[in-house]
Image (cartoon, rainbow, N blue to C red; front, side, top):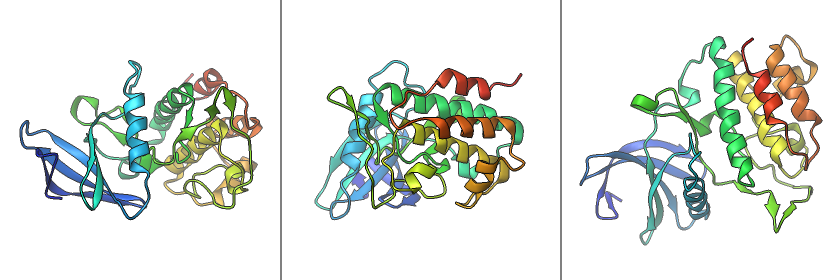
Length: 250
C-alpha cells in the first residue's frame, strides 16, 4: 500500500470511516498531493459504485463542489480510489451564525445538482462536506457517495417501502427514514436542516429533532426549511427556489 498505480506514494493517514480509510498520497511524478480512499476486498463493495458516481457527476460542466477522481484500481487485498485532496470539513471549522445561511445554500446547491441527475445521496451530514484548498478555500464540496442511488429507474420514481435498517447517520437522517421509510429527495433536504441546526448549536442528537419539530427557539430560516421538507410527499419534486429564498439574507 506504500505505492499504488506506480506513481502514488503514501505519506500519511487522513481519517477512518465506517466503510474504509482515507490516506494522503503524493504523485511522485508531479508532486501533487491527493486523497486515497481504501476499501478492503473482504468488506463492503461500495467503492466501485462511488467511483462510478464521481466520474458521472464530473462529466457535467456545472459540477461545482464535486471532487475530481483520478484513478480507481485494486491489488490482492484492497480497492483504491484516488481523488482530489480537499481541506477541512464542516466538523473541523467553527462556522459563525452569520455564515450558516451561506453554508446552507452551498449544501442545497450540491444536493439540487445531485437530484437533477436522478440521484439521491442518503447520507447528508457534516462529515460529508469539506472545503477546498487555496483558491477554493471557501467552496464547499460534497463527498462520500457510497450510499448514493438512483431515485428514477426506467423512467419511474422508486416506490416507498419499509426498511428494517436505517440508511444514513441517525443524528442527521430524516424523521421518515428513522421511522423505516425508503429515502427520497425530501429526506436529503431534511438532513440539511439538521446540519444547519448542528452548526448553530454546535451539537445535535436525535432528541433535538423534537425541538425543531416544535419550533422551540429555532431561527426562522431553519424552522421554515424544516416545515417545508416535512410537508413533502415521497415522490414530490422539491421547490428548490423557495428553499434558496429561505436562505437568502434580506
